[in-house]
Image 1: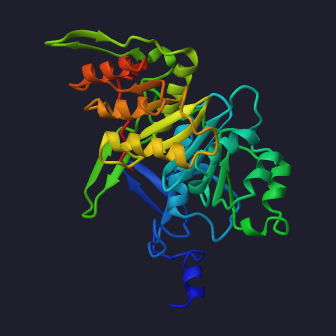
Image 2: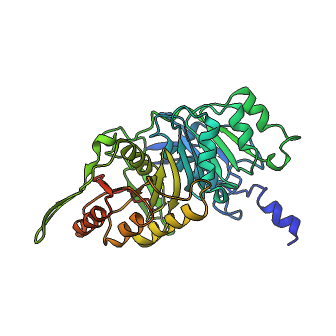
Image 3: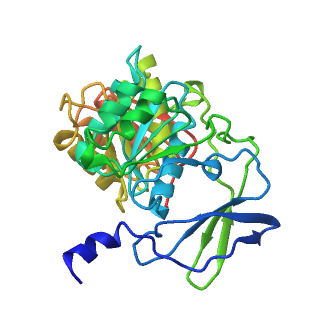
Length: 372
């Protein structure tokens, strides 16, 4: 195979035989289109949506610019996980995705323009953001499009684009390196189910190699606001009761809620470090909890484009702490507040570790493992 053939492999559709329509659990699905390829270039794939339109978002996407032979399965999965984060954000926000994990997420802080929101999401890990998928929960304006086109981006997805932004995305003469960028329009995402009690649109489905299927309810959170955090406590059978000594500040609580919502779509074990509505680092896919913390701390020190100090930053962990070592790793780096589910047999020791460093800790009373 020549070098030319190798390059063409990523730019050419891999054709497969897929039905125009099929049914699952009484729901009829119609094919939207054949995708460029699946997870890898040798895997054919197609995208389907329910025939009965029930508040579709990704299922109702429109390609405003197709780029190199349209979308792949991974592009769509990145968009799915980005939307799953952004639907919780009540202010303009941006998620930069890579391999189904966020490399950076930022929400408007103060009155900053959308361009700066994007820059903060990108620069949380600019190395990983290269060739990623960028998603917004608001209209992409001309200035933001200009900044996006400075680096290689696979796709941009948003509920709206200004005319000036679309002109820039199609300016091949000026942005030759990024001429293959894909621009995807979706309906607004705020109405998607988010919280316990919301009506779910569909089942979460995992299909195994032998055709067996696991059905599950999609993730819905109990965390509607900072009021739903519970100050960490533990009633120990031998040591008695312990409470967290320092309550979290208002800003810490806002950042903890932001970090928790980002963590909903981070591959477990997941840890998110954030400050002022911006992720500073995302630790993902580690098999042990302290490893996820150490990975995130290392990323913040080596990849985040900003103040390398984690002073005043907060951390959300998608699972509880089985030992105090993860808490020590976080507080030793300057983390000032921690959110975690609670419920470990070693909650007492974790709270002791937090109190020793005057770190605030809150429980979410829910876990948000994601094993996508």
